[in-house]
Length: 418
Figure 1 (cartoon, helix red, strand yellow):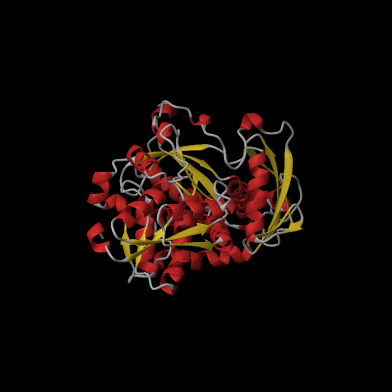
Figure 2 (cartoon, rainbow, N blue to C red):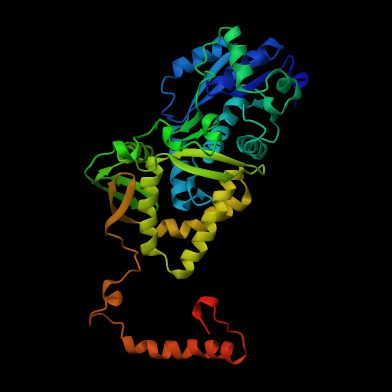
């Protein structure tokens, strides 16, 4: 949709209260568009006072402001990310990607309640978020249209970037917090912070100038390690250090504990965006890193070789699905169904040791479905496994090995010599 399609209509805008939100809201209202701002409350640590967000949006011309409480939804989604071990390109917990799914899922009922047929967002035309907002809305509510100002030529002619937006807001005395000197921008929810743009776009600039929003840098972490126990039942964290927790409480407390020890703080990644360009991101996700690592240790105990191989494929697949905005499609639901048997077995208590940004395994107890057997794995003369029983096993394996050699299909690499 373009600006001419909006005049005289109402747009439900996904507003964060930041520079883009204030600029777009004011610009649309100046062109005869009614803007209702919807702000997702996902326990984002960088925006605790929603009264201030509402004040900024109303000052920018919003006809109404709706805060949508999504604490439990983002926590439940975060637990599922942990269960899938969904790290994009191996390092980035999908905190922002799943957050966009949650925002759309929370906004759609509110839009329908008010009869609003247009969802607007401030995601840029170079990023992943525009894809997530678009596809999630198309899947959950195909009758709702999308307006993305950063793909509207009229908007682009007026605003080339942050500089023009800041000047525009200053001219109209809008209460934005952004300044031309800001070294980077931040997006946040309960699960993590994403820092991008500004000085971070320069690869010769170290990421350690970023001020953590969910913890401390390793140099400021305590000099003594701390042990933490996490109890999982059927895939969900139910207790932290022996005290019962809900998913929201588990992540909130894990954020505090992990952040204190610089766990999951300032992780640098040059990633491949869905739109085909590389970008640099600096991430914080202390709670996800703590709980996710504990869950990874639990999985090591309960999955056999074939189960592990399939799980790793599911993990990689779902990581891409969430990152690319396909978290609601049939393929992702198929993956959820495949994960069900794993979750049913994932019960146990894992004890970790945290120290200056590192997480180490400390102990595992009460894991009823574990496959690890101390007696079978022991090198001592105990257990039911007889070393000599491996003779028949190796005789079977040697058949194919010798066949490969006999038919000239074995070549030693250069480092093995002649």
